[in-house]
Image (tube, rainbow, N blue to C red; front, top):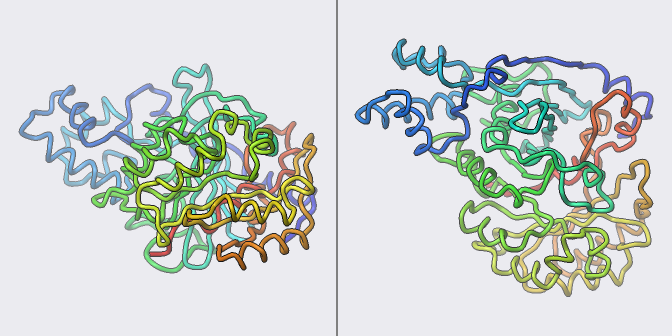
Length: 415
């Protein structure tokens, strides 16, 4: 699918802010979303709920928040009225403000969400992207506002880190998407929406939005453990993928404490090149990174690690690079996603020629590795990595297109 810049600009302007405003979020009330059961119990005790009742109340709240997907205490019909009034007085379960919602011709959806300042000095905004595919619907979630990594090919790397997202803000992206897609009991899918057949619209989640998830480990961990809790949202851990640029000390912890699938933003097979493309490599070079992947808890041919590889013309796309890639990953159960580079204004990189990408992929496939070539999705709504939001940056946004959407597709298992 292709679309001119002017056409994309018209479509990008079709849904303007705000679609949903949440006064409760501005009130400063603490949220119950994102709390562990233990934290939720402590919050209720602090407001006078007796020890005798706490376990039952936590179970009720967990059910309403994560199985029924309610965002209003009054909808909790089996909770006594005085208890609901106490909850409304002291807590919130409101969704984030939806500043903008866009729907692509291919079914890709993008939400621009606004969260309260929380010490950042002003409200912050992040993007969440939904990619429907045959048999699956994948949601890309952000973990930070901005990014501290300065990957030279990635536009997000040009945006300074503002702050980490809380567990509630990470999890709220999933809850909001399920709301808007009619993915909770008793809710309807939007008319004409392209969603997978079956019980679930959001079947897979990838931590691959703004930020480096492993630099916000505890919040990401808490959010993903709630998302995969069998008594709540109940996503399979085989369908949740965390993508990292290579924060080696936290990789083992990810497998051990969270247990989700792993993706690595690799992009180069030599340290001197990866130092430039992915500067965190200077701290954690390839040898350490690959060793951490070999030791990732649960890794096997049935639970492969995904390696992301952006194809950059005359930089990392030679047949020699392909050969070195195979050597580098020897002994690591792996899948390699080849991603055509999406140029953005100011970058010095270009996308590899299509024939070069196909030749690269053929070599890797013949070596026994699955190597899909990711093609653009959501191009007309610009579901792309690190997009800025202001009208003055509209042209830049339209030109960046669908880089991240290509990375999102195809992650996680189909079990």
